[in-house]
Figure 1: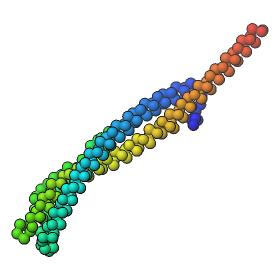
Figure 2: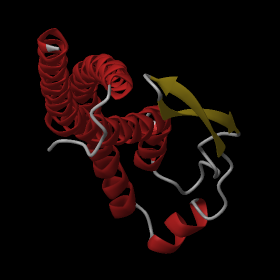
Figure 3: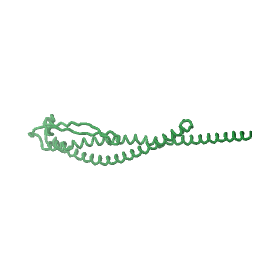
Figure 4: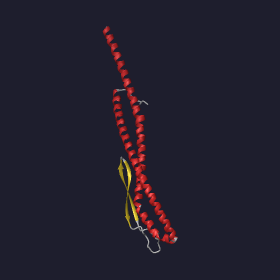
Length: 206
């Protein structure tokens, strides 16, 4: 769709500059989109491997805990786990990934995972808690990577919309307007030249 502008040489120069900037911006955004897609695919593969590993480990922890619950009295199990002695503090920071602010989670750990005396508790409970303790860091890593993947996917979608708006709307409209202005200016030049020739003929006739 042609823009509503005056067909002047100044407008022609202005639109040519705007078109050049739009094409340069389109190229930069397209390069960014391609790079983000590559990063997204790489992160997806990494995330899939990490998630499968954590799911296997959580399944193993759950089985150990079920064995512990089967071998202990319910009241004794609740009493053993009533007051936790291990504390995990999570600090959220951010880093810039191609103009996308993605989370970085760091943990500060204090205390021990075993929060009870060994008398009256089963070895299966010890094993379940120790196995759970080993994957806390991986769970935080999984959470950060999944959020990063979500944010990168959103940025790709936003970038894709901008690329399409430039490629299919703004740049074609600018180019159509440029062609219109060039055509109008050519018509005006031909019209002016015809008038000059007629004036010249009239002057010669007198």
